[in-house]
Structure formats: structure tokens, C-alpha cells
Image (cartoon, rainbow, N blue to C red; front, side, top):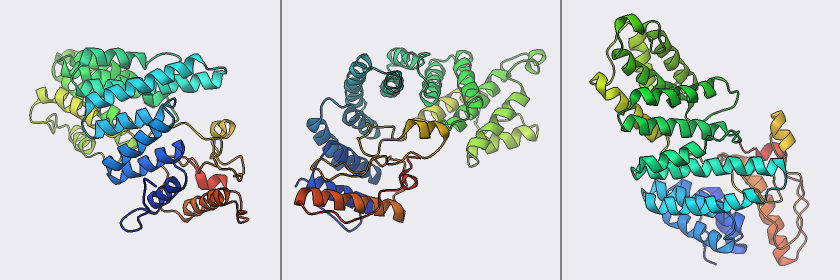
Length: 363
């Protein structure tokens, strides 16, 4: 076995994935093991797990994507760029082969996700013109992933701010803000979008004539509204609190030393908010695949198939955002490991109950 079971100083789920991979290093198990190593900060072992997954199933995109994300965390942006582009080739191939509208929509969303990731790598390499091409590609009308769209718009605004075009940067920030305001779903970095819109508006207001200030979209009232929206999405946003208190007290100074520093402050805020993206959706296994009708209705996705006693029985597809310290999740993992152990040994599994859908929510 390439993976040893360690019981001290490791989370219980990491130990379980080590155990699963020591028994059967399947693609799904290796990806999940890599995710656990990545979250624990052990990037060397995470990379090793992802490389094994890539070798196991080179036709699947997740291993390339995770290697790219890992490269970003390690500030190896050229390496990340190559891995993201390899993942994009696979997604494009899958998109061409899509036979249903649902599959096509999923692959379009994944493609936009990869375009944003490539854009982030290029931004960090200061290849701004190339980055804008990929970020614009993520804004296709067919893409229904609002998180990807707002990220692409925010990063385009970042590039324009870095290029000394704050007035041009205000337009994509407004578009991103309007998407957040008109959406009922959770959008990552919503607070940062509202905050950056506010401080860019503050900067642009300082450059306007007094007669135009109150009648345009850079007004104090608009800035206050943006800051309040930022605090709605993130009540702990320190900078938004400082700026809002000043505006409410009719204080036109800024937390930045000089007004001219505000565009750079907005740019830094955008880039920092994209430093550690949450783990995105991965290829699902046959077991534990979410029911789309349940997702649309707001119910939690769950298991729709009982684990069967075969040599390739996959472990539950637990999403990376799952909490790892609940008794229910531990019980589900142990149940699955018992099933896998019986499949390999030839013994009948214990009569455990089928995993509850509420125990395996991916949010």
C-alpha cells in the first residue's frame, strides 16, 4: 500500500480515506484523500494522491483541476495554468459528446469554472490581456452558474483597476453586484463585490464635480447601500464596517491613507477574495449521485442506491464542504468501509441501514 494508516494528529475522515485507499485506490477515493490532505495543509501528499488519480483515470478532469488549484496555493502559477488547460481540454471533449440538455448545461458550467481558474492563474502571472480573454469566455449566455459569472466580472474589474481604469472597472462591478442582488442563491464573495463597488464609487465621486455627485450612481447614498449589502452577506467584514460608520457620520475621509489609494485597495480586496476558492463540484460516482429534482426543490440530495457487494463499490461522494466532525458522517463512512471490506474478503456485510439522505448533504 502507498498509503499508511495514521491515527495520531489526523482527522478521522483523513484516516478513513487512507484506509479506503490502502484497500482499493480507486479514482474517487484518491481524489477525496487528496482533498483531505489539502485541507490539512499537507500539499505534498495531496499532490501525490492527485497524480495517482490522474494516472488511474487520465480521461477525467478533476485530478487536473485539483492539481491546478494546489499549484495556486503553492504560488506555482505556470504549473497551475498547464493543469487547468489540460482539464479544459477534457471538459470541451465532454461538452461535444453531451447528449442531453442537462449534461450539456453541466459541462458549460464546468467550462466556465475552468475559464475563471485559468483567468486567476494568468492574473497572478500578470498576463492581463490573456486573462481577460478567458474571463470573458466565462460570461457566455449559456452559462447559468452565477458564482462563475460574478467571479469573472470581479476579476475583469481587478484587471482594469490594475491598468489604471477605475471608471471602466466600475461597470463590471455593477453587473456583478446586480447579479447578486437579483439572485436567491448563495454567491461566493458577494460581500467583497458590494464592498469593492462602494469604494470604487467613493473614488469616482471624489473626481466628479459637486453638481453631478448627488445625481449620479457614485452618490453617498449609493455607497452606504453597497456597504450595508456587504455587511448583510458578511457581518464581520471589518473594512465595510469602518467605511459605513464614516459615511453615516458624514465623514468623507477613508480608511485608506489617500483617496488615490482606493482603486488599489479595491483591486487587492478582489484578488485576496480569489486566493482560496472553495472546492467545486467533482465527477460523481454511481452511488451517492444527487437527485436533480431534489436539488431544484431545495431538498437535500441523498443516496438513491444501496451499496452492493462488488469489488468496485465506491465510497460515498461526500462534498468537500461537508463538516467532518458529525457522528452521522462517521457512521456512514464506517458503513461504507464495512461494505467494501466484505466485498474484498467475500464475507457478507453486516445488515446496516441504508445511508440517510439527510446525513450526506453536500451543502
